[in-house]
Image 1 (cartoon, rainbow, N blue to C red):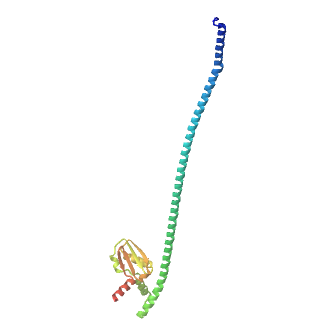
Image 2: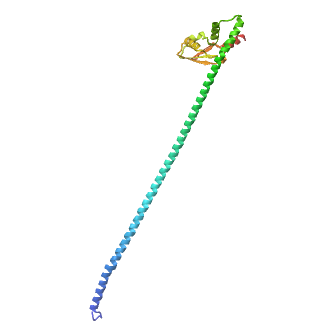
Image 3: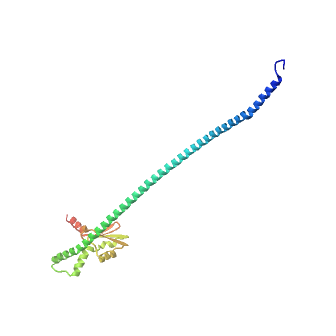
Length: 234
């Protein structure tokens, strides 16, 4: 070695120094550097994972928010529909009630008007009776007693036609020119073979009674008799 100009002791010393330096560098520099790099790598990986989890959470939050928003919109639309339906139902109820009240008012007014008309006609009956009796007295040239007067007036306005005995059914409608008294109504009901009788007033028939049972009619009104007389004279 010395022949080659190499100092063996110095070479060994250099090798030992290099070995020691490598060991020191490994222990003091390389391993800590590797540990730092591993820690940094771990932090980076954790950061990436956290970012991924955050992105997933954000996506989930967006999806949940969209779901909540869609549900809220659906509920709002349903509330609007229910409100419109309820408002429409309320409006229909109010309209129906108003119509019902209007019909009630009209019916009440019609009933009151008919009742007032019948009252006036009842009052008029006495005047008609007085005029008729006076005319009859003039015609026969003598005075009729009161009983005979009432009998004539009653027959004129409320005499039940003989043909009603043949009518059969459940209900009858009796129309008179003037309102009948309670006794006259009772007499008409007795003559009719039906379960119920309704009484109507129609001044245009002038006198007598028109009796309807179902589709059958017995018209003994003065107006009908006058029409028949007029036709026979033509």
